[in-house]
Image (cartoon, rainbow, N blue to C red; front, side, top):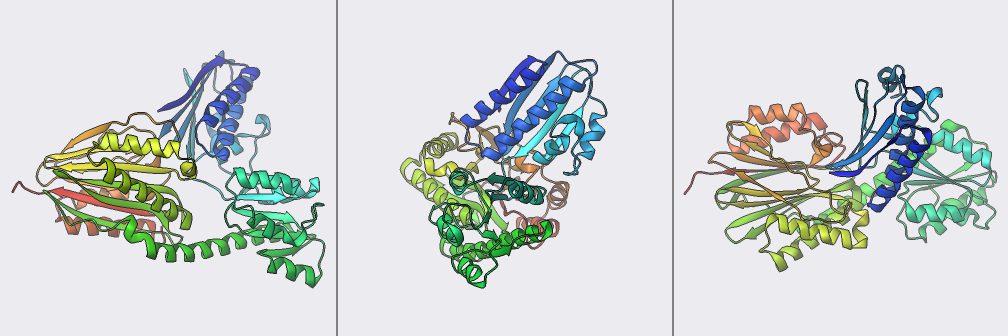
Length: 499
C-alpha cells in the first residue's frame, strides 16, 4: 500500500522539499518518531548523492514509500547516471563507523537506519530500503547540561543505541512523554535542584519503568547511597571512560530486562488462559494442531477460537514487542476481539477485521500497541481469510501456495474496508497459519518463510497431522534456538474427508 509518492526536479532544494513532504505525510500516520526521522535521513542522503554525484546529472528525482506487512519500503529513484561506486560503497557502509565524507552524514548512517538496502544503477537508478516497524535499537536518553560532556556521552553510545540528548530535565521530560525510552543516563546536578532524586522524578512521570544511570563528580558515599536508595541502577563517578559508560548502560538494560521477564512470566500465568484458551483438536470438518515458542522476556502472540454458525473463526494476533507490555496489550486485544464477537458475531471475516481496525484507530490507548491480525473463518469447503499486516498462510496440497493478502496494519493508517480472500480446501489439504517470529525482518515485510521452514513443510506434507506439526516444531526450535528472539506460533488445520 502506497503511503507517499512524489516526483520533483533533481536539485538540492527539491530534495529538502521531498524530505519535508514525506515527513508531513508520515507524521499523519501513527508511526514512531524514530522511523520518521530515519526515513527523512534516507531521502536527504540518497537524494543529495543523486543530485551532486550522478554523472550525467539527474533531471528528475522520485520518492515512494509503501507499507508491506509491518515493513516500510522506501524507493528513491532518478534518471541520471549512478553516483560513483554506489553499490560497493553501500556494502562498505554496513560498518556503522564508516561514514563517507562525500555524502554529509553518509551512506553508513543510511545503511544503519535500515534493515535492508540495495542500490542499482541503470536507465533508472533505484535505491530500495526496508525499515521494519519493530524497534531496532534500544533508545538511550542522555541528560547533561555541559555541551561537551553531552556530546561525549552520546558519541560513546551511538553505535549501540539510538541516542536522544537533552540539556535540561525540562527537555528530558518532553522526550520521556513523547518517545519510548529504554534507559536514562543523567548528570546528578543539572542546575534544577533535582540531584539524587532524579530517578524518583522520572518514576513520577508515569512513563513506564526504565533503568536510570547517574553520573556525578560528587564521590561521597552518602550521595551514592542516597541515589541508589532512590532508584538509580548505577552511580558513576566523573570522569568516566567510554567503555565503562557503555558497560554500565548495557548492564542496566540487562538487569531491567531480567526484571521484566520475571514479571512477564508471573503475569502470563494469570492471563494466558484468557488470551488463548484452547484450540479444539476438531473444528467441524477440520482437525487442528497448535505449537508455539516464546522468548525469555515473553511476547505478544495470541490466538482465539470463536464459534460461528456453520463454522469456526480463528483470530491470530501478533502484538509487536516483548515482555509484560506486549502481553498486556495482548490482553487488551483479546478482550476487544471477544467483545466484538459476542456483540457482532454474524459479521464476515472482512467486516470483523474492518470493525477491529476502526477501534484500533479511534482508541487513543491503542496507539502504543501495533499489532498484526489474521482472521480465518472456516466453513465446510474452505475458509475466508482477512489480514491486517499479517503474513499470509500457506495452503498445502498437491502444491504449496499462498493467498495474496494486502491489507493495512492496524492503528497506523486511517481504517478502510478490509477485504477477504477465499481459500478452497479439498480433503487432506492443510492451512498453516503462523506469526512472523520465524524471520522477523523478512516475513514481516512480505517475504516468503525462510528456506529451513519451507523444507520442513515439504518434507512433512504427507505425514499425519500430528507428525507434521511436531516436525515443524523441531525445525523451528533448531533454527531459532531454545530462547528465540521473538515469539512464534503455528496453527495447522486439515480438512478431513466429508462425513
